[in-house]
Picture (cartoon, one colour):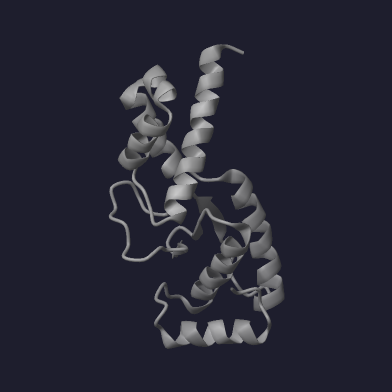
Length: 170
């Protein structure tokens, strides 16, 4: 394995962990992550240059986390059986580092995910497993009620129903 390959793997891991931490602390952008890499890992930054580091920051920030997606797809199946009597339609579950689309402004408060009803996908923000399970149930309740609004009475009632069933909500 060449030094460049080792450095590319190292850069990828550094960017992944940095994005995870920065999003947990309130958010980041590819530019902000790139700037952080330049300051904290100047050798890697210099080896690859601004444009390649920044481009990789963007790719990783909006990428799916396949292992986490696979775990949550299985939880979707179990939760659908346990809490929804298999009444929810089959939805794809994608865990992504940042649920915003490139160029979207950060929300005023962190978002755990959202349901894309048109494409049948539940997007969940990559974080700790217990938070992602909670977010999945939260968004499955949105699927059950047909709304993405946390203030809808039907959704609130569905969340109360889940709580009475001792669903694993934080």
